[in-house]
Image (cartoon, one colour):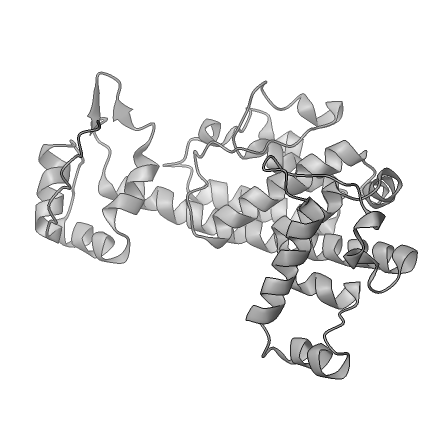
Length: 299
């Protein structure tokens, strides 16, 4: 039988600072500045940015000289990085949403997406039909957004019939990923050809983007965060990625490939380089899987 741990007591800002200094060896240069930081972002959230900055032989203690301001700057960098990524992923998500709707509408008709015979009969690990899950999630989202004008319009005027080009606007990015995964192989190949890729590569890119998008949308930590979904990369880009890398950099290379290294990508890469330059005093690029020649990889 497990022994339940007693919860730690709540601490005032001053008590938190005393603990950080005396127990965790964190440098506090100005107490008022530290309190101001803790009022904006609670320490539990900030503490994740201290991973990799602790003494190997005393894991409760920060390395000498690490300050709360240092950790807060890492948090600020991460926030700006997430905003950059959200913008570029939004463009890719909308493009994928558009292409899936266009292809399925022309091939299977306005409501062909509702017919499971138009898709692979894949199931999840719980033996549930992926197509059924997608449609169920769509129906839930449709009910949740019943007062949104375009939803209300189709409920009233078309008795609840939604063509794919309308329905897909109610699909989450995760549902888009699932929808691509159950397309027939010919359909998968046609969508993947828009990215000059094979279906298995595009599938992995989409899964990676879904994970990154969810991290960004929920304000979670991205800096120095191990990721679950790693994109498959063609050899021209995989040369820049160490084997078993599970950090951010490979996903950036997948984004570059999906954008065909176009002007949107160049703008993103330029802004990313500027952001890195602004925080070069605190960030460690290796914590995000960046190789030494990262600039040439992103060009």
